[in-house]
Amino acid sequence: MTTISSDLTAAPPRRSFQFPVGKILALVFLLALMVIMLFPFAIVIINAFKTPVEYANSGPLSLPGGFYTQGLVDFWNRVDFTNKLYNSTIIAVTVAVLGIALSLLNAFALGIGRVRGRVAFLIFFLMANTLPQEALAYPLYYFAKYFGIYNNRISVILVMTVIQSAFGTYLLTSVLSTFPREILEAALIDGCNKVQLLFHIVAPISRPTLQVLFVFFFIWTWNEFFLPMILLVSTSNQTVPLAIAVLQGQFNMDATTSSASALLGLLPCIVFFLLFQRTLTRGVTAGSIK
Amino acid sequence: MTSTRSPLNKGYWPFLVPGVLALLLVIIIPFLMNVGISFTKWNGITSPTWIGLANYEKAMHDETFWASFKNNLYVIVAMTIVPTIAGLLLSAFLYDYVANKMGKGVASFFRASYYLPQILPVAIAGVVWRWILQPKWGVLNWILTGIGLEGRNWLGSADTAMYSVMGIMVWFQLGYPLVIFMAALQRVDPDIYEAASVDGANWMQKFTKITIHQIRPEIFVVVLMTLIHSLKIFAQIFVLTRGGPGRATIVPSYFAYQNFFEKANVGYGATISTIMTVIIILLTILFINAQSRQELREGV
Image 1 (cartoon, rainbow over the protein chains, first blue to last red):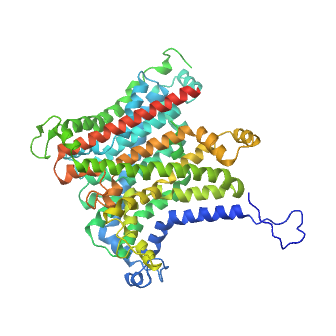
Image 2: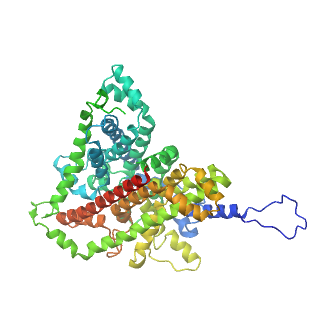
């Protein structure tokens, strides 16, 4: 570490104060990077509360003079944001619950039961997870129309549940394959059947992993764009990201309305982030370990 | 481990039935249909005509098709190469230096702030950046003209559109490798660093000889996942540029989408998405192989 010795101090004491140059440089660097990373968030938040006149006069970097919420209210009403929040929430919660149920059933058979051909099954699920959605899009669109669930939230729920459970199966199987065998054997000797084993022993003990999966499935489904865009056409069925992104193209919006719309898209995610920060970090890293 | 088929290892296959059926209906059958459609000429309404490999041949001579894959190389630089390298350096810096000298809380605070873009829906990230880069009243041009530089139409002109998209991708993607690498560093035995320090290794030597080597499995995963994501990139392009101007930012997934839903060339769209899938599956196999060979060699 670099140290600075000042030649003004004639007789420096043995333990002189050392100006922590290294630490300060490091902090400056980290803060500068943080400013860049958070700049879009900050700029959206301050401009969503400005009047168009204020924006025109003082530009995008100044703090808002007042707390102008009319832009937000107008945009909220124009897109019927309550309805978008409702759609997104219903879809994301249902997918997360069903996705976990399906992953748990699969992983119980593969990780605990170690059924024949489990490696082949796992590769099968992994492949399903890595396939590009474009390679499923047209047949899914066609099927949805054929079965009368096109432009219905059910179509997105069904498709997303299966896609999420492919990842969930992959992750949960590797977790369950290290499940303590003694517990399973003891339960079976006590006369537990397979269904009881799953619901009374395996599921409760795996709860931390299931919670991580829930958060992930929820957020991934909330953030999904391509499939909802293809399967949900009418505005009353659209999700939050879809409504905001599609509106960008449709209206010629001014600066403050644009940032109001962006803020409404950001806010739910910031709330999720604050709520789930720990789970997210745990989940991201759990997903990386095969 | 129980070697024989004890009761513990019997009677589980019924639990697989719902999952496998759902997978068949939603993924396997649609995918096989897509492959089938790729051999046809179909507008999505009248019945498809079998044309064999004609779509594949067309793709080979289609400039837009090649442009979309060439652009994908730029996206790989922005989504895989730069974030992986930057994430490695940054995670080592936060872990070795910041956490030691300033406290673990400081390190995880910065990690969290760099991770924040990752939680956004990519479509919303696109909306935010389009607003920042808007040529007339956007923030970036406002700052640039304020300090006497010239504003540009960042997303609207062919010579800057791709670089703008790349910049946004790096911003978006950095947090993912960072979080994974920081977790990976925690499992490296500090004794190894201790020993290296005793032998007189400097920071750079420790980084290249120990750190990178020790967290190789995580590097593999990050590179594979981000490569797959970059090949699938769609929402960002849809929101930011719609592949334009001209062909400047077109990518395979958007090109496939255009053929499916805008040009009514369903057969050709299916061809493009099938080619994408083949590439992604090959990549996955390649990496899984490389990884298991690595583990064999190290006896993990």
